[in-house]
Amino acid sequence: MSSDSERLAVLEPQRDEYLVFGSPQLLDEEVDEVVATLRSGWIGTGPRVHAFEEEFARYVDSPHAVALNSCTAGLHLAMLVIGLPPGGEVIVPAMTFAATANAVIHAGGIPVFADVDRMTGCVTAAEVERRITERTFAFIPVHFAGRPCELDELLALARARDLRVIEDCAHAIETIYHGRHAGLFGDLGVFSFYVTKNVVTGEGGMIVTPNEDFAAHLKVLALHGMSADAWARFSDSGFKHYEVVEPGFKYNMMDIQAALGLHQLRRVEHNLPRRVEIWSRYDEAFADLPVFLPPPEEEGTRHARHLYTLLLDIDRLRVGRDEVQAALHELRIGTGIHYRALHLHRYYRERWDLQPGDCPNAAWISDRTVSLPLSPKLTDSDVDDVVDAVRRVLHHFSA
Ligand SMILES: Cc1ncc(COP(=O)(O)O)c(C=O)c1O
Image (cartoon, rainbow, N blue to C red; front, side, top):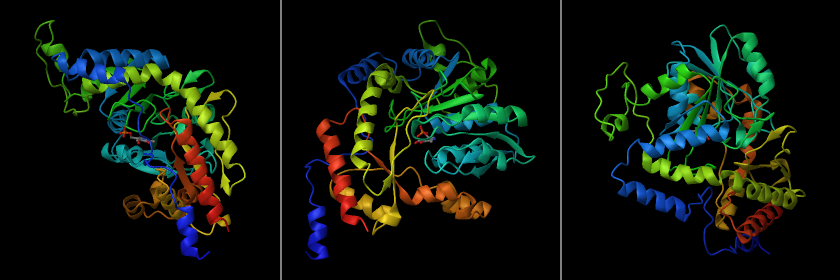
């Protein structure tokens, strides 16, 4: 076969429909709740947001939970309530989404990138420690893909060096470490309900904290710095005046978003075994391919199974990751890249004169990682199609 016809054969899709990566499972209960919200006469921050905050707090067993319009907003406010000083350094993993570092910059601080473990993608205490200077104020562990970071070691380090810890729990709604939910170990934990996450509200986020003062401050900062929210001002309990006590932001969640979140959250435990099932299927199906599989769940922890990130062994392939991803696309399988390490992106690289070798493991992952569909919405036949496509493409491109 010529290489052209060979390519056509491998890229002949078996599916009619494109499998969209991260497409959320939205059921009738969400649709009905959104419609009920629209008909209720109140779509802004109101009773459903308050109910969602209460249910989320109960779910993770936190004394406080504040709903916001994104995790990004939450990370920004977290930096403000901990009192990050101008120019204060915050250590963030290089292997994360831009929001983790940008929140530090928007709060007037400097993100300092730490390397991660090659196989788990999680930052380690040793890597954080290496980056500590006299200007370090805090660090942000990201529970990568839903796997908890080594929190015992990280918290011991924080205590020893008097640093604040903000857990980026964007991937970690169901994550448990030594019996407690992720998000409750540091000063604050910030969750995401973005469209691809394990609980979706369209856009949305939640901050949890054991600290009552932080929680009260977050509520004020999330709504213009006003002392009372709109529901408190306009609801049937009667009009109340408000006062601006500091220049805050417009980061509040709406009841339309919470309408989705309430039902999504109620299904999250039910969905996890399905995520585990798909995960195990992938592990078995790909064990003989030129890839590194995600390591198993560590003892005493629960992995949220947010992302199934396959690391391609590109030394045993004839092409790079982008070609593999393009071939999967041709086979109508959508995938994601989590992530191209932040220190490789132009802005951070140029601003702080960073080299790929500054965080070599994150750079290594960047070239090899591809995230496969992993959603309770997938049918067995969808999962078969993903397995078949990955096997065909990697066999085809094997060196
Ligand atoms: C690790 C991480 N942190 C932060 C965020 C930001 O979340 P959001 O989109 O809710 O602002 C994301 C979102 O994708 C993320 O993956």
